[in-house]
Amino acid sequence: MEERGRLDRGDGLALAWIKAAGRGPTVVFLPGFRSDMQGEKARHLAAFCAERGTALLRFDYSGHGESGGRFEEGSIGRWAEDALAVIDRKTEGELILVGSSMGGWIAFLVAVRRPERLAGLLGIAVAPDFTENLMWQAMTPAQQTELMTGGSLTVENTSDPPLIITRRLIEDGRRHLVLGAPIPISCPVRLLHGQRDQDVPWETALRVAERMTGGNVRLTLIKDGEHRLSRPQDLRLLSSTLAELLGENGS
Image 1 (cartoon, rainbow, N blue to C red):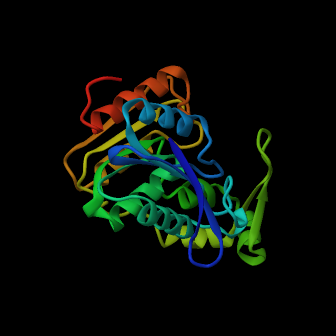
Image 2 (image 1 turned 135 degrees about the vertical axis):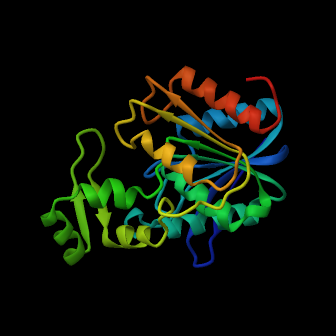
């Protein structure tokens, strides 16, 4: 049975969440950039956990999905604080964080802040440091100047609505970069990444694995997998990987 609600993060802005009761550790799904808790992988995990009686928490960052706030006012640090607010107030005991794309970066930041609660971490096409490595470094000098002087840059996209990149997003991202130093996470970590990922290079997952301080880290590369990893075979791999972290053998 799912429970839904809205949580005031402390400044009057409400974060939408959905929680399913069950046995621990609680699985927490952290969505990607401009994604939300109703995406295909989130709904797949909801069905997976419901079938097994495993507790699950999913939510929307501010400016995403059903939560309040404007997307353009968000940043990596702000969204990590959103995650911590919902996790701290809506869960107890051990956690398994499942982070997709940007959600993987958020998961690393949460794990470092709450190491005593982590039973495992599963990253799907993780995108740590993307604001610097995939946004800022891809801009022309003229675009960088426009962003820094005007405060934002609008990037047209053929398949999605135009993306507004803010100076706040870039500068705050720099305060939360993780790939330049060891990542102090010692719980079991599983990383899934497609080698046909056109958004986040699969080599990023290799760098993450190298940076993790714990020894129980495994990376699975899907040769024909793309960024979303939402095909039936991808979702089956997600299920079996999470089942392993939960101490199960089935898929």
